[in-house]
Image (tube, rainbow, N blue to C red; front, top):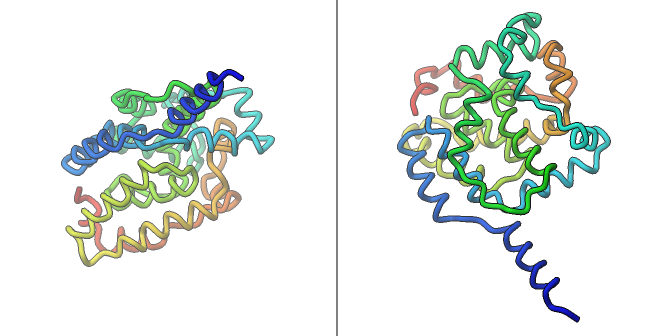
Length: 252
């Protein structure tokens, strides 16, 4: 029996699961110096993602709605970039809330693409389904801000990352949460960062799985009603800090 299939299988397993810790460490140092450097976030995620995309796509295939998404591969980015259409959506809708969020922050879906392109993709095994899924996760990042209610301040980002890693596991995101929490706790010892991270995790556990939802069809719907339908709990711990100590929300 030829050993080549076994050798090839072992090589593919290694490529699929490998991580690049040195690359991740270099990127986390840069990110801690400049928390607004989104490109470093993508470098860390890419370097440490291992098998996470394959596992998430396998989960998506288990659900009829997920299979339809994989077959049709809708392009959420084009809709999220159409600011005129978003601005024309009803007040209080998901799409209008998304527009208000990215407009206030000076963001765009294309901006996320540009930042992600700073991080080379190390894997060679991603098929069309995995590539589409990875791109979709990137493209709905700011939509996750809208659905959860977390802002772009440092503790809002850490809390959102906790939500994200609960929904789709990634070693890189866990690493960012760990390092970011340590830094922020040192700078603000009066804040309970662990409680914020725990809250993000609980929201992620309770809410519907965002990657399995065809958001293209729901942008016109009322945000509050969709949050209730899909089990998005309010981030009360985060909001209480936002109300009690707003000055700390702007510190990077």
